[in-house]
Length: 311
Image 1 (spheres, rainbow, N blue to C red):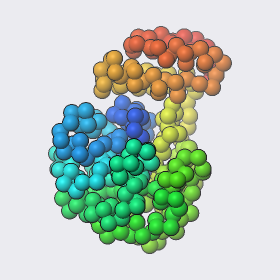
Image 2: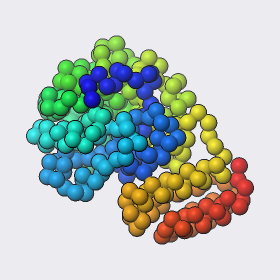
Image 3: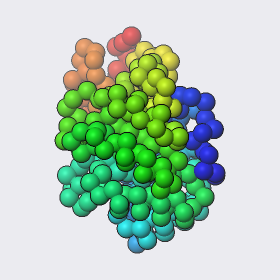
C-alpha cells in the first residue's frame, strides 16, 4: 500500500467511523454488504498491547478480507510501540494505520492517550513521525476540534501533515463538549485551504445525504452512532422493517462466526435492541431480545415480528 492511498478515492470518501464495542468485524462486514465502497476502521486498539503480544488485543484487529480497504486504528504514547505496531499491521495486510488522538473517555485521557495528545503537540507529532517513517502504509490521524475550542486546530493539522500524516479525520466537537452539542465544521472548512492532505469530517452525520450536504469542499465523512441499528445510513434508500430482518439475522450469524456463539450472542444483544424499535409491541420484543441465548432464539423472535407485517 502506498502513501497516496487517501488521494485515490472518488470524492466524497465515505467510511464507518471506528467505535469501541460496535465497529467490530461482524458489523463492518454487514456495512460492507450494504455499501461495498465503504472505508472501514478497526476498533480502538492499544499499540502497547500489540507490542506485548496480548492475545485479547490482537483479536480486536482480526478482520475478514471482505472488509478491505480496512484501517487499523491504534492509540498510545510510546514511539517504540508504534513502530512495532506498524510492522505488525503491515504483516496483517491492513490498508493503512490510523492514530487515535480524539478519544475523550476519562480513563484514556487520564493515561495521556487519545485527545490528551492535543495538549502535548511535540509528543503527538513525534508519534506521527515515528509511525510514518517506519512503514510504507499511509498514516491517518483521527482527532477533535481541540480541547476546549478550535484555536489550535490549524497548528495541529499543519504539524501533523509535516510529521507525515497522509489524512486527517476531524470530529466536529471538542473534548470539553464531546457529545452534548451539535458538531461544528466551520473551522474544519477553513483549514482545508491551509493543508494539502485529505480531510474528512465526523460527528452527528445521520446518513449519506446528510454527509454529502455537510462535506462541502472537504474530502469525505465518517458515520458513527447513526449506524447503530441502521447500517442502511450507508445506502441511498431505507428498507422496510420486514426487509431488514434477513440482515439482522446475517449480523447475528457474523457475530457468532467471529466471536463464538456464547460471546457473540451476548455482544449481539445491544445491536438487537438498536434494530428493534419504533413499532407497536417493540418494547416486549426488546425485552425478549435482552435474554437471547442462541441464533435460534433470535430467529424465533424475528419470525414472530415478521408475522406483524410491519412496514
